[in-house]
Image (cartoon, rainbow, N blue to C red):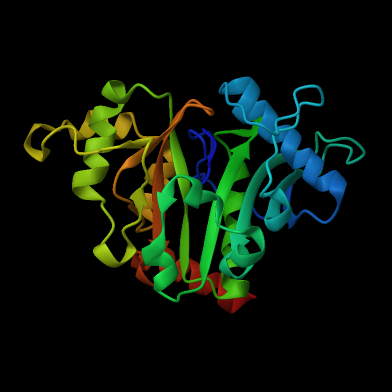
Length: 279
């Protein structure tokens, strides 16, 4: 789940066009290392996914304003921290991304995405997988460089672990399929994953995406209606799986994004290689 979103639930995160140096930036990115770090991430997720987007879930703690689930202990939690805020409270964590390498799947029982999608082709590939989800940035920090720093941190994580395939559920806000017919159909016709990476949405909440024929699509309208996070993954060379999944609990319509890091566009592959050379 990505927020307005994970590879989240509707997209409130997107890479920034402007780059700041580490010295100029008030932000730093690090992994959660304590129960307090995780609590801060869960509180931010509550603000975004529950209070802002109207989501829910069996383990959501409304009294303490925490969005959490049974998978949290198995994930690493990448945090975007505002160094200007006192770390004694939770407010210093203004962005989050949770990530789980494939070698933890056995301990977790399954990937989170397997609740909604058959990811058999990815598992069968034998490649090093990384599931992404719960990406979100505090509303006061969107539209600037915050997400750029979070994505930089994700790039470092991917390189350090030799990850070959990234995947995760990303969301359109709402469950009105008729209102989403243009963007879903555009994704199906123009960005469907190749057969060897084509995950499939599972019944009973599966929704076909081929709702409008390719010759009748309004590309501009489709792009306007597509969350920025999904468009960002597509620009990186990502694909979507076959079919969407209606998540009424979170009030979203989810697609599964898949990206082979070996098939990125030359521009973004060079970006990752430059980071590797600098490391």
